[in-house]
Image 1 (tube, rainbow, N blue to C red):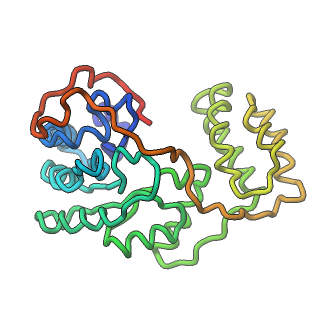
Image 2 (cartoon, helix red, strand yellow):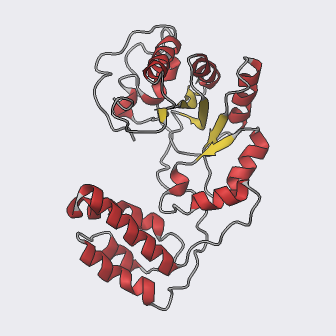
Image 3 (cartoon, rainbow, N blue to C red):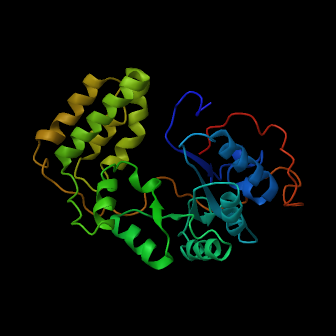
Length: 294
C-alpha cells in the first residue's frame, strides 16, 4: 500500500516495541526470536518495493532477555533478505526503556555483519542518544555507521541540527532561548491543528510541553496551564509571558539527560510456547490485528 499510493520515500520495519499488547501476539521485539518468520516478513517487504527506489531498513533490540539474544541473527537475516541497513536498540525487550543501553552489543553486531559477508550493510546504533556528544561517542566506541534517535528528540527537535554539526565536525549550535522554544511550541501546535483539527491537535500537544520546557525557568503555573490548553488562542495567551517575560533569553539548565519513558524492567509477555522453536514460521493467531505499539 505504501508503495502503490506513494506514501513514503523510505520504509523502516521496527521490531523494537516491548509493550505487552504487541509482544503477546508475537509482534515487536518478540518477533526476531522466530528466525524464519522474521526473515519471511522482511523478505515480503523488500519484494513489495521491487522496481522502486524505496529502501527497506530494519530495527530491532538485542533480544527478548539476557537468555535469548537475537540481534546477531536478526542483522544477518535482514541483510540476507534485502534490507539496506539495520539498526540496533541496545537493550533487550525485558529492559524496556530502563537502565543503560549496552553499546557493546552494537559493536558486536557491526563485527558480525562484517564476518557474515555483509560489511556493506550499514549498522546504526540506538539507545541513550540525548546530546550531540553521545552520538559521536557511540560511533567512536562501537564503530557503527550512524545513529538512530528516539526519546532524545522529545521536546527537542533542534537536536538533529546539533547532531548534524557534531558529526560533520562543525561547531554545535547553541540551544534555543526560552522565547525561541515558545515559538517552536506554537509552530508545533499549528502543524498538529492543521493535521488533526484544533481540539485534537491541542490535546496532543500537551504531552510535549514538559519535554519542551525541561531545564527552562518557565514556572509551574505556566506548565500547568500549557497542559490544559484546548485552543490555539489559549495557547497564545499562555505562551506570551515566555516570549516577552524576564526569562525570555534564558538557556536550558541540565537538559541533556534521559527523556521520555523509562520505567522498570519486566518479564516479556509472549504467546504460549513462543520460545519452544525459534525456527517455527507459523504466524501467531491475532497477529494481523492493528496495534499502534508503544
